[in-house]
Length: 195
Image 1 (tube, rainbow, N blue to C red):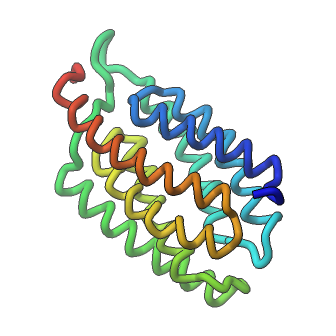
Image 2 (cartoon, one colour):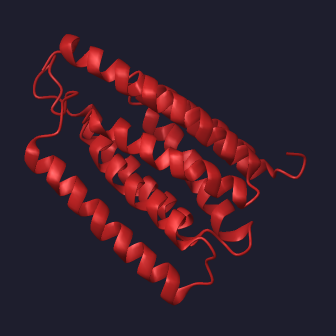
């Protein structure tokens, strides 16, 4: 922990704040996320060796999806109804998410094994693939985003520990707990939120 650089500290704090706001269904999830993910990408690409290429790239995807989600979350059908209220995935959205996961995992895994010096291609690609689906579902306020985050965090914890990123390891443990809480809170909010 003494060797933890300021970029990892600030990224961790910003991402914890982001998940806190996500749990509360508050649009401030996105500006906090943008700060956190840009710094995380820097850490993954430039501050460890060999880099966690997929985790670095996924943070650039998080940035793009944060802008997209921020836009979606402020859209309203009228003065009291969100264009994207908290809801469960339709069967089509669920199958699209599963297909997106499979395609993303295969693409990232093949890329890591063929084009990089990654020594963790299986775990790195699993974290990335589940996170790709998580961010898409979160931008649409789908409750299943929390289940995908739980899966992603379970894999990210040992991966970051193995890479010596102790602060990020602790962050992912917190994310795992907060994701479970977010899942429970969003299910309750869905019954009380105006549609």
